[in-house]
Image (cartoon, rainbow, N blue to C red):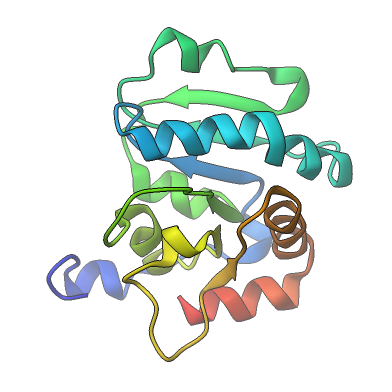
Length: 170
């Protein structure tokens, strides 16, 4: 995507599977699709992931977190609302899997393009992947319901070979 990223970004060195941990989601809280995704994660998807990975954590990044978002922060469940992040690329490179369960919205998703250049596999929906798919496989998994999103996220987090394949597709 030369209109979005320069050669330096497209050719950056990224951490390996073993150098990363956990999950992340990122997006401006004032954008309704992002807020809906965070709520869906908290209420339905994240409990299914934690059932399979009881020690996993999800870092929730985004500008303008309102009190209703920061109130979702829960260390015990690993749901960590961190708000604004100074270096989104570093945050993306630190996570093993990017979650983007978008149920509505349109166009190219910067968070998913950034996940690809950071070699971070993503789990998103058909809406998330819309206008971004090519003849190649998605650099992660596309799923549309809470259980399938959770299962795909767990597989990418635990299976090093599947993670590496998705990472290389990015």
